[in-house]
Length: 254
Image 1 (cartoon, rainbow, N blue to C red):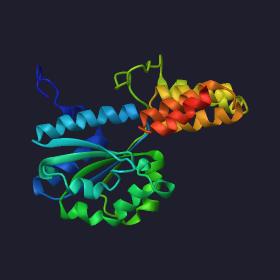
Image 2 (spheres, rainbow, N blue to C red):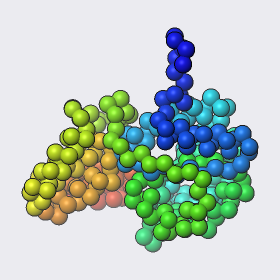
Image 3 (cartoon, rainbow, N blue to C red):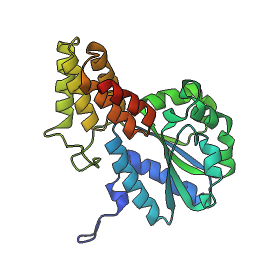
């Protein structure tokens, strides 16, 4: 990079994201489909990477669009193939676990059943997957899994300059050390609701929402009468766009 020249969005991407971007750029150049799977741990890391990927794709003359799966809009191949501007768009999709149906598997089944629609329409999509969704995909959509072009894992904790939702206070100090200390406290006293609650709050503040959910649940089982764990679960489900579940946990919190 020349001195005095501002860095491009591509130069802000690490090796894993740059490889995913290269797959997309090659697909755009040769007018072919591209399915990128991106497994992540922290929502804040995902937001940072998506912002930078969007900026880099704009440099390539591409539009970007975001779609979140829900119980009504769960068939991603059909939804994306119906987009009138799909030829010049890279889609960012997420929320597979919220597709509805028995075991919340509708979105996975739709991917498996209509996978060829993605190829026939030369769709280009980055499918964001939480760690549990990443484990579920090859199990519930094995044929779609074979269609993938590239897989990247982004399992690190967020950086100090990552995006934080309104009301979330950044942690002081090194996130990894803070998380390790909280896990150490849980291992030292696994029957304590307060240690699980402290771990859940740290996980939540780092955007590790699936991990926070499990820790809040553990705290609630150890102390069903405590309000903090139920309130924490209500916040998580509200973030995930699940108002009925959020309301249920708010009622438990009193």
